[in-house]
Length: 169
Image (cartoon, rainbow, N blue to C red; front, side, top):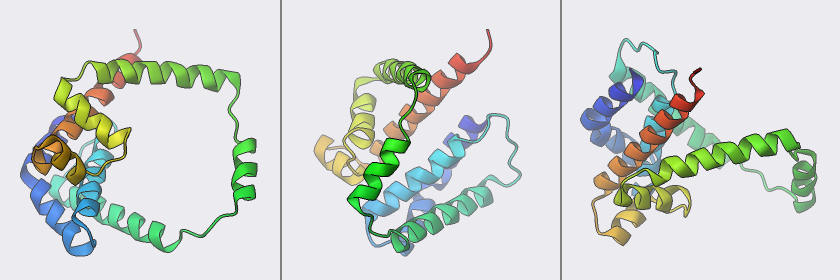
């Protein structure tokens, strides 16, 4: 099962992976975010995926995250406001899509409400307020490692809820 593999990798390789990013990125907060994104990508794999060499796969994924971050920074061209508005107008979803998205949002909110209070607070500060792991750690007076564990727990829970609801009955 992927979630147990990711939890095991998180316990054993998280500090090594963070050092990998810290050596390549300028800020510790960026390294923490990249570390989290790497584990999130692993969580997004189909549940019955077989990985022959989990540590090697983890670091291959990390290099992909690093490459994406570098590409994103280098290729971020300035856009014109009118072009952005035109693209948004063309991409307006239809009523069916709006209803489906609202249903998914309601399920996500319910899943987040099921989390323990501290875990929920950390998750919302990260995802809703956009705070870095370091900022959350300072604000809540907990370690950065504990912030990452709470976020990982929340992500696993939300994914499990989503999976349960997607299963045929």
